[in-house]
Image (cartoon, rainbow, N blue to C red; front, side, top):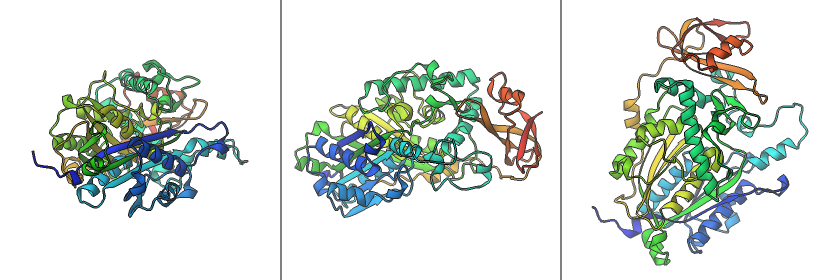
Amino acid sequence: MAHTDPERTPVIVGVGQINDRPEQPGDGLDPVALMAEALRRADDDAGGGLLADCDSLAVVAQLAWPQLNPVDGAVAEALGIDPAHRMQTAMPNGDSPILLLHEAANRIGRGEASICAITGGEALRTAGQLAAMKPRDTDEKPNALRDATHRVRKGYAQAYGLVIPTDVYPLYENAGRAAYGQTLAQGQAESGAIWAAMSQVAAQYPGAWIRKPVSAEDVTTPSDNNRPIAFPYTKLQVANSSVNQGAGFIVTSLAEARRRGIDESRLVFIGYGAAAHENGNFLVRDRYDASPSLATSIEQAMALNGIETGDLDHVELYSCFPCVPKMARRVLDWPLDKPSTVFGGLTFGGGPIGNYMSHAVVAMVEKLRGTGEKGLLFANGGYATHNHTILLSGHPTHAQFPQDFDFQAQADARRGPVPALDEDYSGPATVETYTVFYDRNGAPRAGVVVAKTPDGSRTLSAVDVSDPDMICALTSGETEPVGRAGTISRLPDGLAHWHFA
């Protein structure tokens, strides 16, 4: 094993998080205050005095209060610090905290910093409450996710209802279920089992937002409190973004931690990691039943650290929607009866947009301190777009930094051909994947079929949700819609419409 220089060895020394539940929306903390408080708690956790000497501050972009962006300067001001290096991520992507953790490790490895602070926070719960109090011309509830400036645009995908992650991830769920050879009931049972286990973790973890365990049946069965969102997902199967949460952590060199007298049993060491991404346009993917970049990220991280699945004591498999941990656990061969989270998942732990994995870092550090155990953090962001995996350990790893974590070339090499996109197609086709969208009363409001044409092109078509036979064919589970033949026609509204053969 190569000798590692303590001045260039990154360790996590402090973690902190906050849940803000004001009785009155106007009393809620904004994202800047949440981020600053999380880092104050991380500083206290590390013994105090580190933030004052912090030379790098990295912030996960927030979505809830766009009028505040960028917030890295405001966070530094709130903390009374002036680090030489300061930045905010370009977008609030789910992989951001792990990217920033890895970049902090590299900054320490290059000798560019000795104390790095990373934080993020969202106050979508308060933002939604305040928006709902304003007079408006529609009965439609305000939706900060749909109304985000980077999503208010019209295009081919948007014309068919594919706007936010809740619309898109079901395409992976339905394609994956068919590829795994599962019936609808079997696919939902797997989702229920993963999510019920997450709820149990959240129930035992003080930092989680919802601490009430639910059964697998509770998760997948539509009810007054668990309305359908986008087939086959119900409310309990999607990330809960209506939270006010902040989390942060402090990374120093091992030498700095020792100079400050931090007990070595409280240090958590950083292993190697790997990142890879899909095309930013989710219609320009080779498939929807798997992700080459997801698999590459996880496999390369495991290989770099020289470990196998059996060596892992804990994992955090990103859980915005069931299809993501389903894909990840198949790459890892992670057992269904072992929890896939240490924080509680994005439904129960809480889904603060791009900052969930900061909470996972906090929980993982708490698990690993004073042990010889290992934990894997797998983060996903965008529309199944961004993937970043990294190892943490309660004892020193062989990892040396800086480390190039870009494995895009390997991901691209294993990707199959991407179908051409035909936006004007009419004629025979087969279902590649699909979903149905529901209104707040649980009634189908729209649907979309992603179809393959005879020449292998990909095209979109709308679903007539007023046709009960169509809805039954797509959602009953009596037959598998993926792979079924049909016809696409053009109606006066200009959209393509799907008809089963």
